Amino acid sequence: MIKITTPLTTEVIEKLTIGDEVLLNGIIYTGRDAAHKKLFELLEKGEELPVDLKGQILYYVGPTPAKPGRVIGSAGPTTSGRMDKYTPRLLDYGLKGMIGKGLRNKEVQEAIVRNKAIYFAAIGGAGALLSKTIVKSEVVAYPDLGPEAIYRLEVVDFPAIVVIDARGQNLYEVGPEKFRKE
Image (cartoon, rainbow, N blue to C red; front, side, top):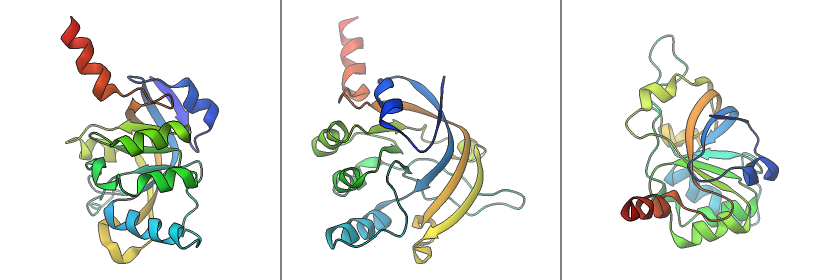
């Protein structure tokens, strides 16, 4: 396991390769479909974002309400492809990493390489376990969106796997090919 502290730097990202297992520590932000649309529209108008995402990671999650004594409810990844139409613009702005699950389109993969960014996968169906790595949670933008608001999360040893690295290698493409050859 490779321990990484946020915010991400190009130097750290360039050392990572597909299949690397990481433990993320520090601050990450959440964002799903509705928040992405709002952020994209602000960037297209040349306006400031409510949260500076330069060098940051966006986790595609809509957490459930916290149970008593917990800082957040279940917090498992959602399908990343729904954010694909907005992602290249956010990466060009300075976003450095994303956490989700599932495939990304060609434009996102090209934007990852162009911006020396990275795409991590978290394990779907493990939201209750992943929430235990979140030690602080606060809504920082778009509270009207409920669970799709942008949250600022502080994480300790949040587990993820590098799926698309800064060189454009894609575990979803390379992995199946490896097993077909064996």
